[in-house]
Length: 245
Image (cartoon, rainbow, N blue to C red; front, side, top):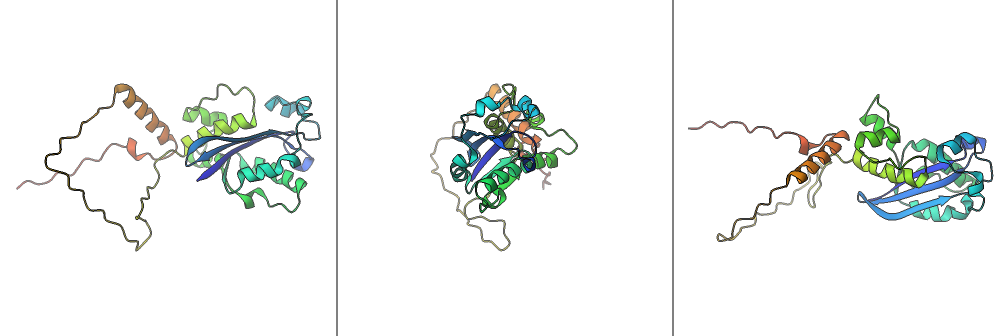
């Protein structure tokens, strides 16, 4: 499963008013593991950046003067995200700008939602934590993700932080499907006969967890429980008493 955690920075808030993307940052996640394969690009927007936007991300017109335009990196960007699931916080904003840039580059190009599955972590957070603050900073605090190095917004930095938040949000227990097993009606199960061990086999050595390991395990279960139900952190049900003859 390949996922791309994506963020953008822009000259303003509305592409219909001619605002453009000035930074794209992407982080790759494969099978819920971060890889070192990233996509990061500053872009020349051919327009002035709104002063309010500069206060948010700190990117200036002078800094972008020698940077490529979106058309120069569009093919590399599409090749990078192709076939992946995009993970975006407040996806409507970033996807709206990306669709605008793609249409400017090639009017025949498909929209982002036609090229990739899009998951909005803001919508996910609102469903998990209704009525609470669900900004990226608020989620970092809730899930214990360190964002102390985030003085200003930055597309790659925010994508890296969002990747950690997303993995924590979705870290609760999920359905486990083993080879040869299925939850679908009428499906047959593969029965594996028990393995017979030799009678003279010595007992297995039991290695107990250290206090530090138990504390780390408890902290991890608590973080997982914030994203939903975590069966491992629930107390085991007492076994029913059996009558003795």
